[in-house]
Image (cartoon, rainbow, N blue to C red; front, side, top):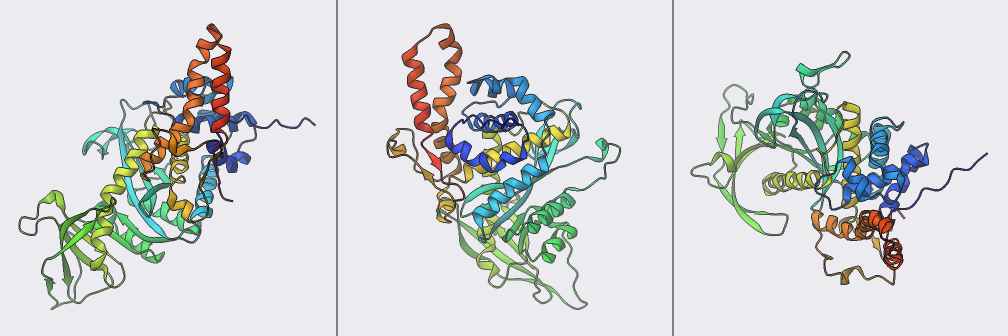
Length: 431
């Protein structure tokens, strides 16, 4: 019996991350395409189309655009199995450490109606109704580092197919939270906007699972009170909201009390307690334990930065750059993007402090001496540092057509040596 060959390596940090996924692919070529797509998604290219990725990593025939398209749309691998493996990698990394769970939907414009489940609907990126596609996303935050958890494609009623069952966005969010809780991860608190805060199904599911939450509610939110009980509010209290970068901003909070205080509490946060500007005033509902007033402002205020962090990952890794139209292939693309997103997040010192991951350069290579190496720990800085490690492979791939036309043995040998040196930098992953 012929033994399957070993997969051809790319860049050690990417290969280290992808190794736990190897058994999901029966064909070694599919695993190589999986790894090369991670390189292409992380590489410093503006658009992550499959033809562009193929040119970026086309060191050999494994990365032609047609092969990558086949891998995305026709190859026999399971999106659900890849998600389960990615979440298991994450669970082994964070272990018992609780983290913030953030639920939000993300939408992007799409022309026409060829792609599955594209419809006229509210698109958050443009803050209005537009033709596009929407997903409900769950992501985590640990000590300021965002990382992806799961997503569900939203299927508008107008685009349902035979056999589809309509689920609202809060219902999709409930299913995501239940799936994540079943894996054994621990959440310190859940954050969500008013679409989910106004859903009793969503908030009651969090309560059943024992997950405290801070959610926005609308100004017309109704609260049942016993006969004779009255509504009252505390006086405005100033506090300094601590931002992700360590700076602080002055905010004001007021608790709204309906009858006697219950487990569910209500707060109003604002930047101006006199004029209550709509764009910087929020009504919140929370089940945080005692002294919630001390933390509710910082927690919910973090949502703005968290959303920005997730959008940054989407924009940098090509969330909307797929050229497929069926829902299964779109979900496969999104799962690959989330996998690449997790790879970047795992480079953070936050995870190194857990004892699970750390960058392990060779003695012959001092990464910090590179003029573009950034010691900051922000997600974009981590991505830029990873891109430095990918540059030799990307440059070699882009120069390959010229080297075939104009043989320059010294240049080819130099690029090979530089690529080999990059492969001495490892992610000490799950060891």
